[in-house]
Amino acid sequence: MASVVIQKYNATISGAYFTVLYPPGQKLPLVVFSMGYCPGGGGSCGSSDLTYYRYYLPFLKDIAAHGYAVAYLDVPSVVSTMPPDSWFVDEVMNITSVINYMNSTYPVANVDMSHIALVGHSAGGAAALEYISLFPKAIRCAVALSPPYDSSMSKGAAVPPFMMISGSADTNVPISNQEEWLTVLTSPAREVVVMSAGHDLGLDTYGSTTYSELLNHTVSFLAAHIGYIQQAAPAGLSIPTSTTTFGAIVSVMVVPSKGPLSVRESSR
Image (cartoon, rainbow, N blue to C red; front, top):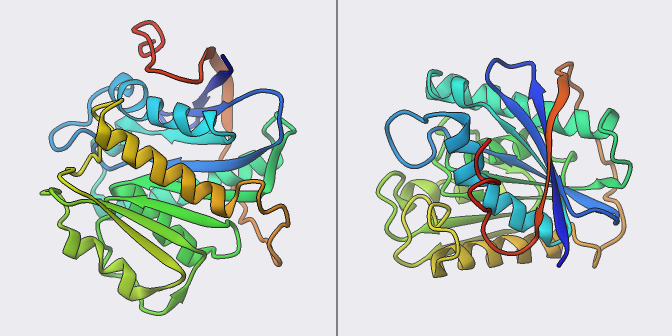
């Protein structure tokens, strides 16, 4: 069975970690993931173990296993205390920092920076859509999971293709609110509604039918836009710069590419 390497670094933001997941031995498109404002729905976001290992990491590992390098900045201490409006601004900056770091510093030479996508959940999905409106030539596509609409967005922004995945039973962010994005962004867009799914879209129930539907829609869209079915780099690719740096690596795990993470693998 193939494996996925998980490299975790300290970040310069207090309490944050920068992580890269990838299947070794091949040239890889890059997926940058943006976390939600408070994963798990309501209350305190809890520790990094909750937000990183037990909530998002299995999903990101499964994306990586389909042939992608996945980069992710986990900022739980910031997320649990920062006002939502400020968080949007900072998360767009975090996405910029991750892309710039992967382009200029990251030591894995087989990451293809001409094939970049964003994936984000909840407020992270909204940040991904805001990012592509600000830097439309930096990436190829975006997948926004349950993204709350940002009313400050101006209409008519031309962006790369994006897909929005919503749950029909989302009580945190109603579908009618999420669909506002479709009125302000000018792009080939796809909307998917997962029936009976809530705001978490199965991220909290690994291996469920809902989770499988979420994963299948996500990797199919990524394959269509940054998979190696399409080899050519987009014209005018322009990656924004950032001065943020990341510290020394703190752990490396090699895990099976299929199946859930074990208790040892899902906790530090």
